[in-house]
Length: 312
Image (cartoon, rainbow, N blue to C red; front, side, top):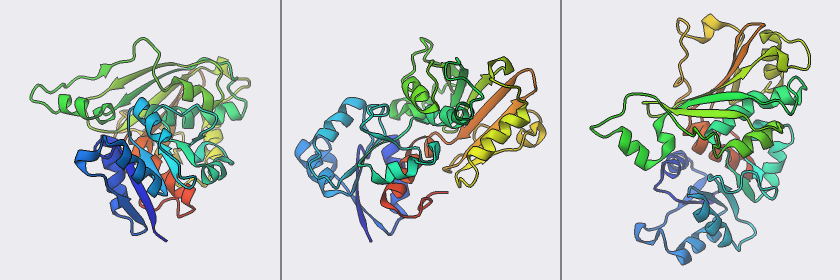
């Protein structure tokens, strides 16, 4: 069977990457919009309603506008913006979130694609809250270092200009990053984390680090215990690997490679530290599992095809 797919916002970073994934698929017919009609509401509406799946790779307001154009009840919308991620009428497009999540994605016609930082944070912390090791009201401190591609075309041009920036740049220093609502909603945390991201002078790759102190736990737990909670929670998941608790094996002479999952849809989870203080580090490709790969994975789940179709 062939499915019709439209990417609304096909010229953006996420849209271009989704089109690269879809181009490899014999079961997908991509509906293209002419360049001079990208802002033509009537043409966008026609293509959205002619599709089985429409990906929205747009700013929040434009994404909401696209949703308002849908009148075909069979069209499934997968929105890569932040507009609908904590909307109860939308399904969060993270299949590994919980046992019932795939069934929800399969049944839904409105799927909100997770943010890159949020995906890494949620996957690292959700199992600990679900296991009762972390109380829901715990305040977590975390940071993220990410490639500059996550900032879109203007940031990419800025970093690749002759006046290239070669230093990491912390941002969101008002501590109100737009991913905070989903970080709380899908970990089960009731207190927003102190979250501070950093743009690195590399194209893509992302690692979120969450800081844990055993005094936050509801019971005694070693780093090996924390690793086992993660490993048990994600047992059998194709795209998530929980690394053994082994500093030497998981680093290069003590240094951590943020880019090791680039060009994949994989997430690696690590526990570092000791019995007095610990880190959970979640690594992914911010354009893969952090954006376009996650969207295609959610599409596969919704359509009932092989979940790894077109993904590595």
